[in-house]
Image 1 (cartoon, helix red, strand yellow):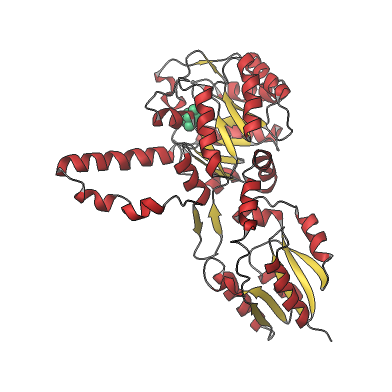
Image 2 (tube, protein in one colour):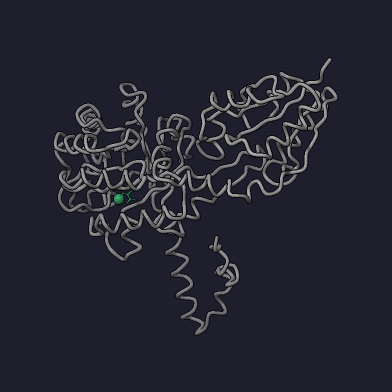
Length: 435
Ligand code: SPV
Ligand code: MG
C-alpha cells in the first residue's frame, strides 16, 4: 500500500520552496497537505491574502497532492493523530527558532506509530528574492492595509493594538514579537493607534486638537512609509462635520482602516482629566449626524468609523452611555463603539459591555485600558471587547528614557556614565537598514 505523507503550509503564494517540499513528499507516497486556517495565520502572522477555501482549492489541484485538510492550530498534533502518516516532510529551516518546538512535537507524535520526519534543504533565496519584498509592498499598500482591520475583526478577538507616533515607534510595533516558551505561540501586535495625546506630546503641545489634521496626516504617512499593519486614528471630536467628511476621504485614500471620534464639543481636553477640567459632551443626535455624514462620505466598504462615548468620563450615568451607543449605531451607522473610562477598577466598563452585548452581540467594542490595566487582553475580550488599544505606552516609555539620560549627562559632565542606559552607537547606525 502506498505510504501516507503529510506536509503543512501557511503560504498563499506557491513559491519554489513549497514546490520542493512537495516534490520530495510525492516521491515518498500519497501526499496530504495541511492548510492552516485563517484564524491560525492571523493569530501569529497577519490576515492571509487568500482565505482558507481558496488556499485549499489551490493546493488540492496540485499534481501529486491527493488531499487537503484544514489545520486549526500551529501544532501538528491533532492532524497527525487523525491521519497517522508514515512521513511528515518539511524544510530543514525549522530546526532552530520559533518553530523548533513544533518540530520536536512532530517527531514525538510520529514516534508513536513509527512515522518519520523527512527534512528537505531549505530553498535558499526564496525570502531573499523579491517575494518577501513584494508581499510587504502589497500589505503596506493603502487598499490592503485599509481592508485588513475589518478582516481581522472577523478572525481574531481581541485585536491587539498599540500606539505608534512616528516612523521609529511604527517600526517597533511592526516588528515586536514574543514567543511563548511553553506553547511556542508567537504574539505580535495587530495594528497601530495614532493617538492625539502622543502625536501632540511628541510635538511638545497639549492634547487639545491644536495639532491640526494636516500635521496628523504627516504623522500617519511617516508611519505608513515603514510599516504594513492597520492603523486606527484617534480623530478627536472629528471637528466640524463639513471638515470631517473631507478628512474621512483623505484617511481612506491614505489606507487608514478606522477613525474613532469622541462625542465632545468645544475645547477638547484629554479624557483622563475626567471632570477636573471642563468638558462638554455633544448632543447625541448631533454627534450621530456627524457619524452618518462621515459614513455617507466614505468611498470604500472597508473604512470604519467608531463612535467614542465619553459619558463615563464626563460623570454621566451608565444609562446615558448606553442610550448614546444605541443612537450612534441606529442613527449614525457607526461601525463600532469605544467606551472610555478613567476608573481604576474597570467595573463600569464591564457593566457597560455586559448590558450592551445583550442588545448588540456583534458590534465591535473598542477599549483603551490605560487606567484599568490590571486586566489582560484576554480577560477584556472574554467580557466583550474586540479591540484593545494600549494608547500611549511607547511615548511614555520614550519620555522616561530620554529624560533619564539627559539628567545623567548633566550630572556627570560627560556621557560615559550613560553608556549602559542607551543603545550602542554601532547598533544605532544599523538599526534602520538601508534596504
Ligand atoms: C489618546 O490616546 O489620545 C486618547 C486616549 O484619546 S486617552 O488619552 O485615554 O483619552
Ligand atoms: Mg486622544
